[in-house]
Image (cartoon, rainbow, N blue to C red):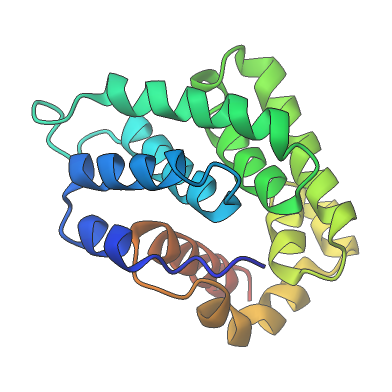
Length: 185
């Protein structure tokens, strides 16, 4: 899996300097467009700001439309060049299943998100984090049959190593997994 650490981006995010994080990350991605980490980290930042309801940002100070415009550009680029990459599939699949209307038609993109998480799981069957992302979206009976609770317990030692760094995205997923693991144990 990708090393998600990105020092300058992490620093901007930790300081809640969202506009400068966006500017920096987008500029870095623009000069290195085939770097999937930069694409996904920038995508996740833009997605986060687009869906925020005032918990992270002061919406009077942030122009969400700038973040949305970049998210759309990154999505289209990723769709063209990273459509078969498991990391692109799980990340965008995750975002789509939570907020399908941000990507377009709610019903369509919810299904696309589920399909992409499944494809990521199939393409990287040995990656327990991606497997957890896929299984998390299934109904309780299916999760139980596929050993979701046990897998959650097993990934505790690798979560910190998988999401290295202290940027918002890493904190988000560490928190998500640990809360989910504790709730389902």
